Length: 94
Image (cartoon, rainbow, N blue to C red; front, top):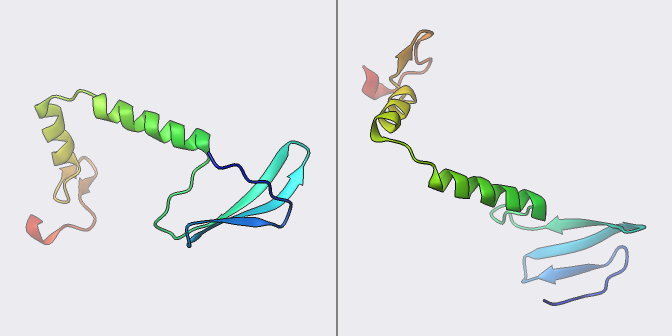
């Protein structure tokens, strides 16, 4: 791990397209800003861990084939339920 000391209004670069700003320091709290390309996901660590946990749970959820078929049918653009047909039917539904 690289450890860097920075003061308020200073910054660091990660590569040539990610910039970390030290915006404010108040007691034990440091407010940072991250400037990164849109294709780079930036998360607080607790949010990142929660996403990983949800992904692990989704990957281990067991679903039988008939449940999956019903789920796919009910999400089809041609699906009709008690509310009626899809609002914007797909051309393949005609």
